[in-house]
Amino acid sequence: MRHLIELSGECIELARAEAVSVCRVSPDSVCNDGRALMVETDMEPAAAAKRLGLAWSVSEHLFSCGAGEVDSCLDAAELPGRTFRVRVGRLDRRHTPESGAAMAKHAGRILSSRYRVDLKNPDVDVRILMAEEIHAGILIASVDRAALEARKAENRPFKHPISLHPKLARALVNLAGIREGGTLLDPFCGTGGILLEAGLMGCRAVGGDIDPRMVNGSILNLEHYGIGGDIRQTDISDWPKIHAPVDAIATDPPYGRSASTAKEPVGSLYRRAFAACRQILAPGGKLAIVLPAEKYTLLAEGFMLEAMYPVRVHRSLTRYFCVFRVAA
Image 1 (spheres, rainbow, N blue to C red):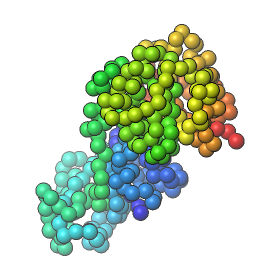
Image 2 (image 1 turned 45 degrees about the vertical axis):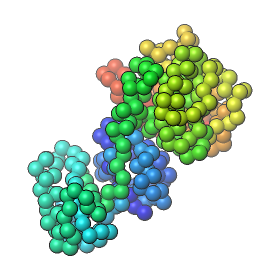
Image 3 (image 1 turned 90 degrees about the vertical axis):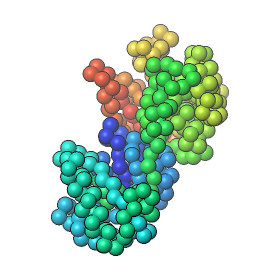
Image 4 (image 1 turned 135 degrees about the vertical axis):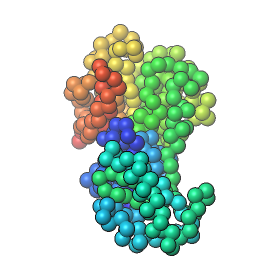
């Protein structure tokens, strides 16, 4: 099945990588037009939308074309129902609100020759995305962005200012390639945001922190959302001694600003972290980690860097979302 995925506007390269990982396809096999991504995959659209953090919707792809071909493509489109409505997304600045409204009206007029318009409860939602080309699909599922916002750090029972936004935590889990039922480790769990997203995706959440306050707070947050987990107070180097190999690791370690490293130099902590992660990862497993600078990738001895996605936080801080695989 060919999906049309509408990516969100923030961190476009990271969003694209997350979608590719969720759909379990090669990056070379997808077609992208800015925030419109066309993917041939066996994964059900609704299942993909349920996992994604940096996207708006997943549709069954109908067509992609230039502006001059829209009429013929709409004439040839077959909708699985009797009634429809059209919703248009403008994915870049070349398309104005007026052009978006005109596209919706024009598409509705063409389709209404064969189907009946129903703006309240249609059989089919036709989603048209306007980028460099025009892309159309049958909307299958929307990403629950409101739920992601509701799970922000300030809305959890245990609060701490240093925490990834849920949409970024979810993207990090997805970059690790973990599947439902797999075991994901976060050895620097903090308030549990990454483990929370992993648990909501049906993964077994395992994590820990050297700070007992964070361990207790993480347990409280997971319980609040009905997620069980194996959360321990432990140092990063101890994980290979106390736990069986895990399927994937996703983590956002402290980086020496507001987050505590227990006075250990960041470089030393990261070197120990990479060594421990390499030992506890099951064969074929991935490490998805957020680093404060590109130079720290050089500490990943025994790993191969698969990808790196810079995410600008503010003027003086860029975080690097990195994906590593154990070197052969």
